[in-house]
Image (tube, one colour):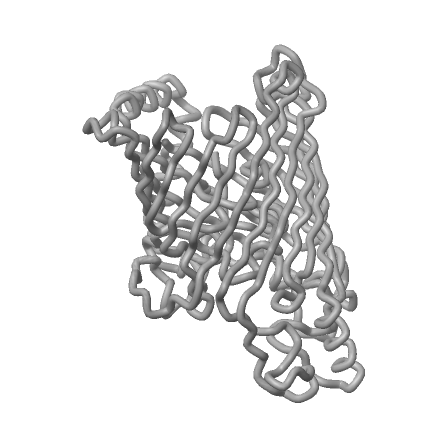
Length: 462
């Protein structure tokens, strides 16, 4: 399951203020009743799920899921900066449908896909000064509306499914530099994609999308190539007046294109079947215009001149991703074992503040024979700030200049460590106590490191 794209996470916490989605508020009693029913009568739950198999047999697969993520600060934030200790709660509901039109209507190789979302909440990380890496990955993007269109596209498979082509409204970062294993974690440094990937606004991140075309080719049994063309809207994406609902389809804001390519290697030897792994390498170049993270139109530091950021045409990113099972717990299921994971992601330092991000972690599934579906996870990430932006901010700070946006002190680099224990309650329901530790929040060494404790709940209704 692509959690970043198909996650509908359920909340047991109170929904507050302007962030509370009216749809989620309206359906909260339904969520609660469903949970109670599943707990009290699992046989009925199984019967209900079995009745949906008839739709699946005819090529119609529905998705209704909900995730809630809560984190609370253990320590106090940096004093004297207007920050305040607190708790943050975030959640998102997603509804989707995948239709196989070959089964349903005889259209060979044709399928359609749609995902809708509704979200609420504000992340805890804002409370201690980090606006770059949300402590809860499901935060943001859905526009505080009842329904937000995430993606809608058609796909055609050919040559015995060795070649496929898709066209429509698609999410760039759901297609490239993505790994579903990472959304077992709550923090946005890991979930879905490395956080550095979404800093470039030419790379639409869930729940946003652009007009796009994508092709996938099975080169061999172990090697897959994927590429595409994604029209970019860097000035409009993530703005409420343009993309709040996801249903504004005009092309007036298109300012370029992103051209990615990714190779994925999945070994299939006898040893690989026993210990599966996945390896990806990718590159993307875009032709959109970007604001420099430190220069004005004359090439000087805009922190010193108070000038408008320089507009630069074109940018690039590259990545390497891997996950490899290194130990299997026999007799506890196909996914039970120890999986090592690693990511390296690089951005153009001319156009992005985060020049590089590196992550390393592991998942352990089925460690205990009596809890074969439980998962333990640990991951650590470090971000390197581009040299030009770092030097410009340090010089401005020495001259008592005010830094921009939510930056309170110079950004030099920082990291996040996260650990969780995900408990499988019953089919489609899990609860995961979670601990996070921020090093240099917001990439700012002057801000206090922060320890967070929280819980993530997940329910798949269908």
